[in-house]
Image (cartoon, rainbow, N blue to C red; front, side, top):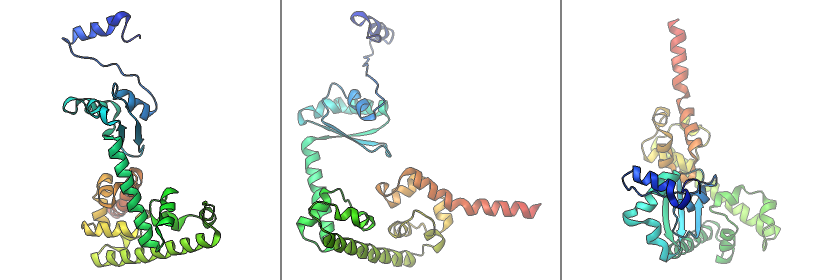
Length: 256
């Protein structure tokens, strides 16, 4: 009300000063999802899927609201992105449903192939929120046994199969890492899994200097942004640079 003024007098005065430039007044919120919904008004939003570690967000809207949310030539969503600081991807409810069904099928098949289980157990694991076999392997056995429909024997068998799968796959990645020439010093840096090390080798990152030359976002791009947070990536790059500082200190001591 204070911004708009009586009968729009305050905002109209600003519009006049800006030679008729249109002004939208948007209610701010400390909650990012609420702020994004406000920024996309008057389009109706059904759901906001926000990953606070990243700068991207998915906004789900009814099909009849898609063009309104995007705006003419993408203006509405572009301005909302600039305002909130998030890269906004707009999906219809149908598109989101199709994508989730596809992800559900893919994750179920992953467990079927990796653990040699039937479709029912695989779907139950996905429903319980497991995204990969590693999560199953590292979960305490008692928590796995607490899942409805699992008894202690089944939980133990699933856990053993998951551990065996992870160990076998890690061994394969480690062998690949060695074949690609990734140095042991790189492999010793905490936070880099065998799969990540193999991915680095495929991109020609083989020595501490190679890794140290990367920026954090470049490292995440190589190993997968979902596999590593920005803070973890920066910490790994700084760990790779430690020998630079040690060398400089040694050279300084020699000069003295």
